[in-house]
Image (cartoon, rainbow, N blue to C red):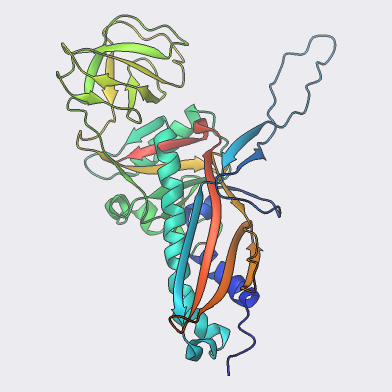
Length: 371
């Protein structure tokens, strides 16, 4: 006889615990959750923190409205894991059932959630700095400086490294003993520790970004004024492609810039558009450095404030028609568990599915460590 304690509700609660324990990026982003049921493809509106501007005082104060801005997020990520469940498995206690069935399921869900977050946000980040040929702590200090230049708040900073990038720095004293300093981190399996004011983690889903750029350096063809979002770059290799998502820096500015539209180089010249707008005027023939890494591509390790990216979860509606199901929420993440029997194949099935969306809220709160 089946263990009556293993209801969809009990399993869903345990599934969310297992999921949360295996997440990295989703645990570090801003989370938005509502009890309202969501549908695949629906657009929801989430709030962003209010912003203010310091103004010079003369004779009277100028009161500012406390206005919370909002952003729309599409719930376009709907993922399911289903498996055949035997009667013997349903007679297990919840701990054994979790070890044998739920934990492997939710590890797969966690890997996918982190992967989807990275795929959505890494090409939106303009700020960047590069690793050096020989790993040194100053690489990490420069990454922190890039966030400072972008006026990122000094609190709630986190850095997520690709396994290969982490391996390069793992033997440095600042990294090797990072777990002995600062506040304890909650994601123990993936947490590295606190380094130079940021909490460091490793994530197996940090993407390796491809690039078709042959020459990593060109020059400005003509002066580009402060506030410009377009420029012509010369001294490039004919037929190489500068693509949306590539990043560059220009001599005279400490900021990083993200290509919005590029093109194929012709006669060593290519016109590009980019974001954000230039913070200073860039002189004619100033050196422009693309990607600051090898031209075959780079790993987009991410440093960011928790409000740079949003992970938006919504509950799915419980099934109708006699299917046993439950929808549960834990720490702003929702999943649905359902049991169904197939009389034609004489098997029982259990599914765990979830609906979410991902959005970059403020690209100025994030930077890449390009490796």
